[in-house]
Structures are given as C-alpha cells and as structure tokens.
Image (cartoon, rainbow, N blue to C red):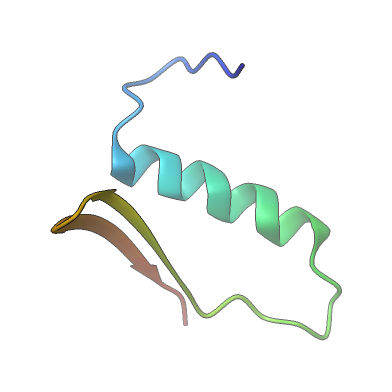
Length: 49
C-alpha cells in the first residue's frame, strides 16, 4: 500500500511511476514516454525530451 500526500489522480500517479522508473534505469537507457490508463477511454500520458 502506498500513501500519498496528494490526490492520487492518474496524472499524479504517472509522475510518481516515472520517478520510480528513472531511479533504476541504467544511464544508457532513456525513458521516452508513459501512458497510464484510468478507464477504457481515459488516460494520462507523459512524453520526455
């Protein structure tokens, strides 16, 4: 179980997931994008540069 100090919206959860993934990625691997589906037709998306 995770307890957040903020609203656990799809957008905020996506930011959290991105932070967790980038912590463990080797330096030669870059995270380009993430998509988190909230419902069958609603999602949050992040694209890095």
